[in-house]
Length: 172
Image (cartoon, rainbow, N blue to C red; front, side):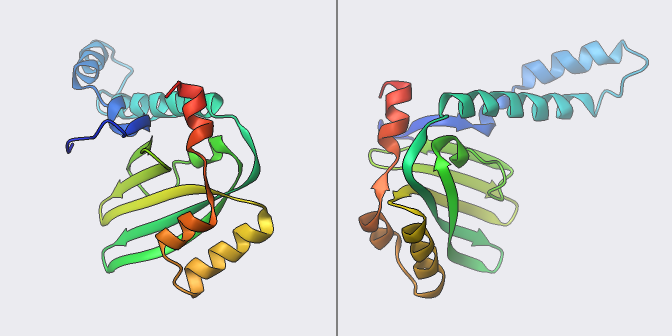
């Protein structure tokens, strides 16, 4: 992992779930069990642990907003980078969605915004979550990003940060 500055405040990181010592302990335990497959269970353990920890963070961030959260997406594919957008919802917990196309997800806040970095076999997606005033504005923003080439800078200028909601929960 690259050097992270003081403003990178981790909400949840899927890489933190993997612990080789824990895996080896599970494998040793399962080697003594005749009814278990040694190779499958650690993967199931990681999956269950990931979902359990992610659910905990979703409970922490169960915060209803007065606006609509929109994600500006800088998407990485094998054929290059593309911009996209998605209406997330009205609750901050909805930003913690593991279906952003990454095998390895990192949700965090920088000094100003909430983000998700989702890495996968072809590249990495970078998402920035911001708050639109209402559903009408959210839909207009998505259309402008998709069809008119709205930049992330323009998106940030037209929306408000959700970082204050998150910072309040974690005491930043």
